Length: 202
Length: 175
Image (cartoon, rainbow over all chains, first blue to last red; front, side, top):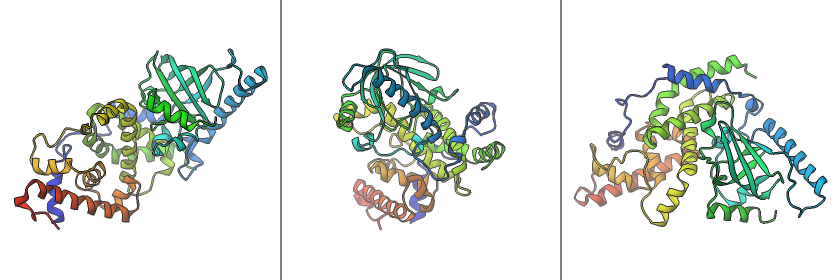
């Protein structure tokens, strides 16, 4: 009986073995695989267990952020002062790697773990680089501009989020990496409410 | 730690093994364009996690990555659409061709479509990817026990849905 139902279901398979697919060998597939192999894997090499984020990237990004924040505080001397106009842009890694590998169920509590969270308007999309002007900081910075960098040649992989100049986005980041999986995306009342809830304490 | 050369060799070998099955997996669940995007995403993640790749059952590992890649893609691309449709209480769109439209077994297709996403997915993994619970488990990120239970329940619900559709055939697949 098991096999009968399984076979019956298998006959519904729209991609049964008779439907052709691209083998891994032709030029188009080779190009994709070669392009992929030209990107670094070394960030993960020291992490046998799946870790949530890439620390080597994180250290640099967080260091940059700390400088930006420290600069801001030094110049303005307080919490409630407006952003420093000439704070350097904050750069975030917009590669996907761990993020897709470790997608977790969305919740405001989980979102609240992000060190960086802001709402911003895209001012430019240039290949692997998306530039946003920050409209609201929820946490983690005072830069007026944030630059998202996708890995070279992987422009299409910026989180599957269709970044369009002029549109507003809510972005969260952990360890310098943009957090996808629903934790960042185009601004919607629903997502904004989640951000407000997650970062209510600051 | 393995050298770049080792990693390339390992990746090439894995690509050779999984490239075509992954395309089938993705195109069963997504439009052609989305499947192509997701394939690139999956292969990139496989490359970046090459040191974590299991020495056997690597295809099931890749299906697990593909599952999350598709979920991620859907979340980011169809967020608005899904919200609107949920508000209108319409059935969720299936990106893959709707098997209930026509096809060899419309009754079964309809019964399958009436099940929850989770039930449908475990049945597809079983019948389309031809996976046993021990390989379904890593794809869904659950224990083998849980995968076995889920499959059993999904099969029971499928049989139940079929007999509801065709009361005169009740018992045909039940039990």
